[in-house]
Structure formats: structure tokens, C-alpha cells
Length: 416
Image 1 (cartoon, helix red, strand yellow):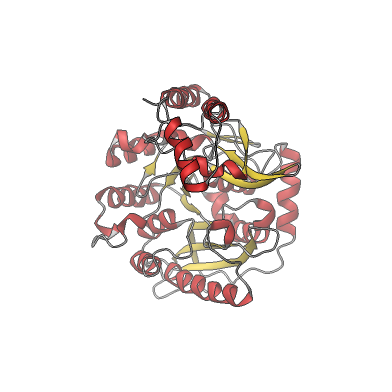
Image 2 (cartoon, rainbow, N blue to C red):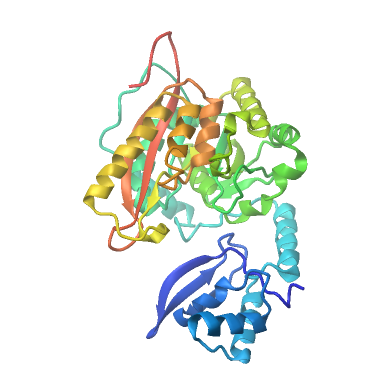
């Protein structure tokens, strides 16, 4: 059945011109398949019909009927073959490959850095020099309230675009990072279904060495969440960059000294929109918050949310580029959202996003909500905010922010 009715996986699609032919590059967003395919623009509509309900013959007929484009059988057969070989079809061959990659991941001594040499230098000396240069460029940081930093909000955008916010955030939190005996990272899972919380027992490596995962805490979380559900999407850890980019910074700020970590990937919460329900009623997320809150009280620990904010403009599906007026309105929307974070109000945070049906595509919705549930009521200092370009014209925007959440040392103290 898989072969008779091809079903395309969710893929990363990048506009690209090969020689004089406009088209698209197709890539695996899970970073499991090493393959990249080029598809000429004329053939792009073919992909819409690869939904598991159409045979090749039906696809050719619909292309001719809807678009007036005849697709020779041998051309379509070759495309389906190429997609299958690249593991881009959701079929038995891909599922076997998925199981193989997960088994290899679990057998390995640690999770290898998936973005070293791409998002940041793979060589530890070069990485150290790069991050130190970012840190040296930090000119001024907000005043520090009296108290202890319990949480950090860090971007997960690439280091080049996010360097100023990254550096300010981690410089501000450096004492807490060095004092921590465990770092728990709540990171965006860019490929997760809504509401998912995904664990791993695998250790995480950076170019500086291996960060051992606190498997005892992972086991407690798995018991609270349900073993099957907690590891259903564990394969996403292989190529997901959000937790990795935060842990590289944490490892750097510790001078390469290892620390126990707990990397957790989370989906969004948009499935609650219009349902009449609220994520506060989600028993699994509530149990996760309770386990993590107890873990923070056990020993010096740091909770990190590895998140970005808005994703707007044509690169993310909006019809027109965002100009200066749009960016000004975006900043106001981001500031309203940040106010709920500064006040430690998870429900207000969720409701602010839900009020616009996540119009701004917050790429940290789930992790930030759980972060605020764990640290509910604690004040957060916003250390930096920027709007970064997502295309060459800066008509598409990713907004990012960094901050630190405090446990005040005395009654009535708030973050500055």
C-alpha cells in the first residue's frame, strides 16, 4: 500500500535556483536523512498530491486536470523513487530507517553534536575564541537584583544572528551557571506534535566534552509522563538544535567543566485554541512541572528555556514583507508577551498568545509555558531583545530575547 499511494513526509522546503532553473531544495527537518533533493518549480504541485490517497496514475491525472501539466509516467516514477531513496516518504522503508537510527543513537556513548561545524565551530579552540569574542563585545548589563538566579531564557537561533542576546544572557547568568550541579533544558522541538514532552536518557556532547544526563531525574519524569509517551519522539533529539545550542553556551561558561544535564524537548500548545480547555488542565504537563519544581529544590540547579519568539514575514508564510511599521507593532506585541514572563505568569503568557491564535508563531510556546509553570510567580529580568533577519531583504523576522529568573533574597524584592 505504501508503494501504491506515496505519502510525503513533512519536509524542509527551501527556494533555490539550480543553474537557470527555479525550484526548491527538499531536506529532512529531523536531520536523519543526509540527502538533499532539488525539485524544479514546475513539479512542485506534484508534492501536494502525495498524501497517501493518490496512486501515481491519479497524481498524473490531477496534475493534468488542475494545472494542465502532463507528467510522463517515467518522470513521476523516478521522482517517487528518488524521494523514497532519500527517506522522504512516510512508508515502511522510512519507518525501518527511523528505528535503526534510534537504536544507533541509544547504543552510542553519547549524543554527538548535530550542528557543530555548521551553526558553530566544531573545534573547541575555535569555538572558545568565537564565544569569548561575543562575550567581550557585551558593553552593559541590567542591574542585578538581590537573590539567586534559578532560570535562564536563552535564544536558540544561530549564534551569528543571535550573538548579542546570547552573550548578554549567558554573561548575566554566569555565576549561576558555574554554581549549578544540574542544568535542565526545556527546548523547542521544531518537529513535535502539540503537547508533546520528549525525554532522552542519552548523554549530550559538545566540542568541550560530554555532559552526563541525570538519568535518575529522567526516570522520575518518565514515570510521571508515562514511559511510552515520554520517549515516543526521542529520535528528534538526534538532530534538534534548540537544546544543543543552549548546552554549548552553558558548557562554555563553565570553562569546559561538565555538569549533569536533563535535555527535554517540547511541542507547542496551539491544540488548546478554541477547545474550551486550558493547558493548566493538562495532567501530564502539571506532573512534569511538579517533578521539575521538586528537582530544583534538591540541589543547586538551573532551569533553561531554549526558545525564540516571533517568526513572521514571507519566509514563514505571510503574504507580504514586514516593513518598519509592522516591526514596530511586532515589538509592542513582544513586549506585552515579555511582561507576562517578567511577572512569572504562565496563564497570562498562554492567554496572550491564544488571543491572536499564535499570530506571531512563537517558537518557544511550550517550553516557555512549562518554564513559567515551574518558576511561577518568580520575577524575570529581560537582558536583551532583538529582531533578526530571516531573509536577505529583512522582510521576514525572527525576534529573540534573553533573560534570567530570580528567587529574591528578601520579601518584596523584584527584578529590575
